[in-house]
Amino acid sequence: MASNTVRSHPVYAACYDRFNAYAERSWLGAARRRIAGLARGTLLEIGAGTGANLPYYQGIDEVIACEPDPAYRRRLARRVPEARVAVRMVDAAAESLPVPDGSVDTVVSTLTMCSVDDPATVAAELARILRPDGQILLFEHIRTDRGRLPRLLQTLAIPVWYCFAGGCRLNRPTLDTLRVAGFEVSVLETLYAPHTPRVMYPFVTAVVTPRPNRAAPEAA
Ligand SMILES: C[S@@+](CC[C@H](N)C(=O)[O-])C[C@H]1O[C@@H](n2cnc3c(N)ncnc32)[C@H](O)[C@@H]1O
Image (cartoon, rainbow, N blue to C red; front, side, top):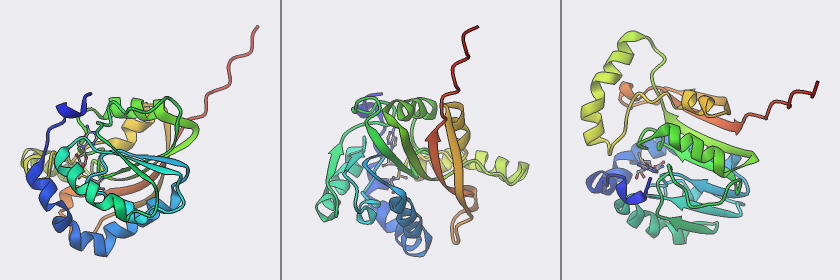
């Protein structure tokens, strides 16, 4: 998907850092720090937004910060000079990433898989660009695991939420989408973040790796 087909959310992008300021101080910053601490090598971030992860990266060869929305990209550009690692900003949607096959050690997705248009295509694209020993580091909110009523409330909230939260879909089964695409998912933490609308629960921190190929069957 071309980046210019991704819908822009200029008002939400303008308010994003202010909306998140309390969460960043109380729990979101800690989640970003944990993700960044696991990162290595050449790192590609999908939906890098305003660059909220950049201050946490250290000791990484290069960060390729992909962001398709110009409203976010302008804010991202302001943070790039403050980063402690080399950052290359790229205008790209996660469905179509301009990097060669098997060239990335770490993909970071924080609060992005809820916003992409086509999660299955994104998962396939991540499988294409990752090295065989590569990893995806996720911090995402996903479809609730708390029964039928929370699931119904989450589903009912989607149209309003989508409009006011920059195109976010509340009930994405992101971990399942990645498993179907051939990844193994290891959940490090499930978080019911304080002072956060319950329709966003749960948040997960996960390390996602390509499933090793099964051995080829022996010739008869
Ligand atoms: C809620 S913001 C999260 C920003 C950032 N990752 C963070 O942790 O603060 C969602 C991000 O996903 C981006 N996005 C939306 N559709 C996308 C797509 N198809 N491919 C890549 N990024 C996308 C938005 O432009 C925005 O930057």
